[in-house]
Image (cartoon, rainbow, N blue to C red; front, side, top):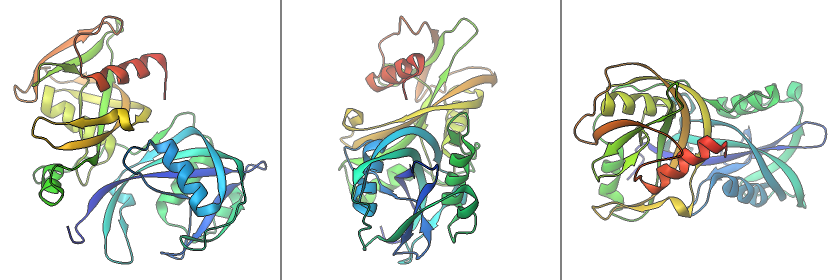
Length: 302
């Protein structure tokens, strides 16, 4: 692919100590202070990725806890020293130390130290790490997500990627919406394969993940929505999927609660064949992973 920009999923570990300080690492590649973490591997979920990267880079074994936020806006784009460009989809997770020797690997991490809220402000650290740390220290009442941003795109980035990768399994990133009416019913769309699902779609270059949701709602069912709350981010082996054309994927699903605020609801006739409201206790024939997302939202599972 050369050095063209790609979307990559990362997990970042916000590792706290008993004094309420946050662990920063001195990175070898950029020579700046950052937070432990790395790229999601096939078959992992984000908590597993955060724990693996923490142990590899810092020598600490950690237990992942609450979701701090998802950082996906183009303002967090990364230009690596070798010229590679990346738009991040980074899931930040609070973690606590449960073991390990605390020795940096000396390859990716040259040093690491715990910093207080006042101390980290003076660090040489890029914007995304600073925002993650700031949100953690502020103890936000709900997981952070970037505001909707969805500029016009040229074509389908994921299909373009397949020209280089073929049908092999890729990690793809998308968003889904739980939209409920006053009676508590859930808005579902009938997909072209004949199964119902939540409003959802894949993230494109240049948009935030909440912007993905707003764009897809407009395109597929002519709806204006307000994205209210990040429920959680779901992936792993149970998210493996093979499409009708043979392309394989591990699907990352950022699940949001959203409100319907406008539009004349109607299916686009292509990806969406019908639209309906359903009691979450009596769901129709659905895409299995979408059924699990509805159940997770209704039961409060993150």
